[in-house]
Every structure is written in structure tokens, then in C-alpha cells.
Length: 358
Image (tube, rainbow, N blue to C red; front, side, top):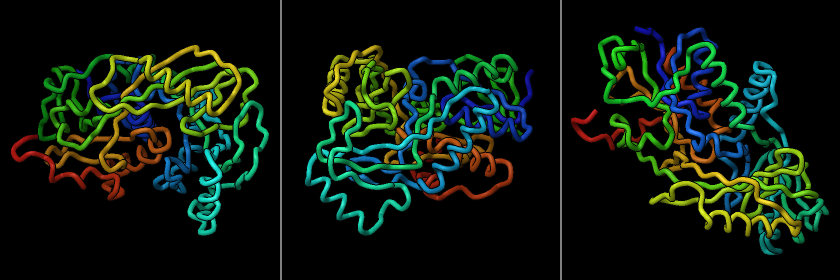
């Protein structure tokens, strides 16, 4: 029988960061994860964007989340002696003179704080970039090599024995007065569900308002396209080195396709042709399912009726930005009973739990 303080189910960006924080605090942690190549975290481009969406709105709690995440990933770079985080400006390309005028007028109220570095009202002449109406320069963002980061953490976990590449069977989990026992093999003081979109089928958390959506991304070679910033116009174009870029992402609601689609490839290729006139070659395509939430806020905290069980997830497309700060917050809550942010706590949905159902 293996004994641990925390049993974490899932090693995407949410589970991996939480398990790391708990281990760094000296706790015995055991992680179960099947190692899916097409998980949402493995597919993601890892973009951290302070101002996003069609409304060009400041991302939720950006002023706290972005610097915290950057420092967290820098620390992981030191630990694993490998680059993961790239701080990079983001150039939001205006699609019309009307959009340019609207953004300039709105900027008078300074709704974006220190995150908008300035505006280009004419073409900034970035190599290979179509921006006849200019755009907005965003700072304090960047991107994380999520697949490489998770692979390094998983390699350590496999070597040191705290990661098991297995599918967790929730029907074999038995809760006891002082914790839980799993499959007659593991005793844990506390269990944390970090399953991502798969939590919609979790017998303990299926009542949460998770609304998974599928996203596709392309990997492209595009020689001559400016690599010095992330580009954003209808799609993000993230430089990953040596003339290679990741382009994304689509949003598909259920029913989901079984993997990448021709429609997704055509949609993303069409979006890229708006950004650049340069020829490009598609070298890869991936699809993953994001664990989004109805109100676009994360879900974390204890199960309302099972004291030894908690949830952490619902990050949607903001996982790399949210995960570090929320991992520390949840660890503090579990270890020291500190308060969670109310707009991130799953308690805001406790009324949805069916009566008499765990």
C-alpha cells in the first residue's frame, strides 16, 4: 500500500502546477495521468495574452496573474535547465479604420492599464505582416512551451515514482474518515480532480457547469514572417523558432470531431492568409478539448459534501496564465484554510449539486 498526502488526478497544466507546488512544500504527492498526446494542454500554444477577444477586453485579473505566471515559469526553467517561457510583445492587428478609431477613442479612458504599450495608426512594416490599418502593441504577455514543460515534469515524475501513467478509475475510490483509499493500492489524505474536460463524466463533479469546447491548431513553416512578436487578428500566430509558427485556434461545440478536421485546417489557413501574403506550409495539425466554464471563470475548491475531495480546473483557453497563481492559492487553502477568490471558487455553483448525490 502506497501512502501519500495528496492524490492528484490529471497532469495537464492545472494538475502539474498544483502537484509541483505541493511537492515543493514537502508533501508526498502521487499523480495519475494516462498521458494523452492530444490533451488540451499538449495541444495549446501556451499564449499569455493580457487583452483578448472581439471586445478587446482586459483579461480577468491580468495584473496579478501575468507577472506571477512569468516568475513561476522562470523558476521552472531554472529547475529543469530548459527554456519554456518566452516574453514577447503581442501585436493586435486592426481589421479596419473603424476598429482603429474605436480602439483609439476607448483608450482615452485607459481601460487596459499598463498592458497596452501604444498604437500604430499606419502599417508598422513588420516583415510579411498585413497591417494596413495598424494595430495595438500589448506588453507583459508571452507564450509557454507547454508540451515541453509537461514532458520535463513527467520525466521527473516517472523517474522519481510520483507519476503513474494510468487512467484513474473513480469507481475504485473509497472515502474514509481520515482520507481515501484507491483500488486497494493507495491511501491519500486528500484527492484532487484535475481532469480537464473529462470531469464532465466524473461521478463526483459532473454537476459542475463545465462546457467543453474543441480547438484545433496548425503548425506552419513561413519563411520571412516576422518572428519578434505574437500576431493576433482572428487567430493568434505564435513564433516557435526557425521560421515555424503555431496558428490557432478554432472553437467547436459538441458534438466533437474525432481529431483534427479538414474544416479546421481550412479555417485556420484562411485566417493566416489575412495576416500574411507570404507562402506557408502546414507541417502539423492537432485538436484538443478545453475545459471551459459557463461564466468563463475557473473552478476550484473542496467538494461540498466530501471533505477529502477537491476540484481544480475549468481554465478554458487561459490555462498557462491561470495555473501558477491558482495552484498556489489552492495549496494555501488546502494546507492553511485560507480563502479562495469567490469568483474562482466552485462554491458559487454548490446549489447545482443534486440532492442526495455525492
